[in-house]
Image (cartoon, rainbow, N blue to C red; front, side, top):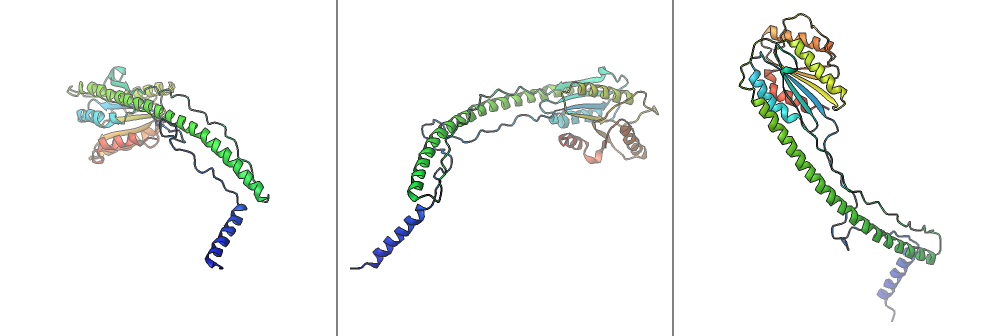
Length: 316
């Protein structure tokens, strides 16, 4: 007896076979990342590891020794500026006094950058056999044979890639161990830098400070030290931080001061009186003559400690 349901099923199957006989399928699928015989989870890509920034800075700090805020400034130096000295950076701090020579320097330390570890050689991506091109206009039997051949090629390539992805994963594991150890050692080195630098500053915070300074001479000392650092090509950025009322009794500078390509910030604490504001206006012009572009002046109302710290942290 005629069965409509059976006929419909057979008809659908025939149509389906006709359709797929003229189609070309890519069974290669995603990279084979199943664990298989690998003793670790295979990975298709090498991991990237971040070390220190290529840019390092030289920071010179001048502290007015006749300043009523000198001890407070030394606290800024210890708590707000030193944490902005990263691996590879150097900080030099000197008093603005009546000496204004290298004898005025009370801190000169570099936060050492440890050597980057040598990673093992990366596994080389293996050559794979390309699949054959199947002409969609060829007979279905020819297309079927081509697809069978491509399936075999893809299977062989998958086995090759499985071994390669296993080696990639093992490389990532070893590299990650080396990077983790380097980071721990580098953090320890940076912590020790902070401990040593703060200890040196602590030794002088109880000192009774003298009156008087040779402001221009101190600026000249800073410019000479910065020029020396530039000539060594060890740093990419140069910063001069000054804590002073910026009052100088001499009407003109007695020596050439070159601060070109130096970022300058001055903490003057107050602009309460006209004379203080005149000092700021005068020194904006002076710094321009020294080659400084847009020097930053910070007063007490601007939170000097946080503003100077932010100024350093935002350097390019």
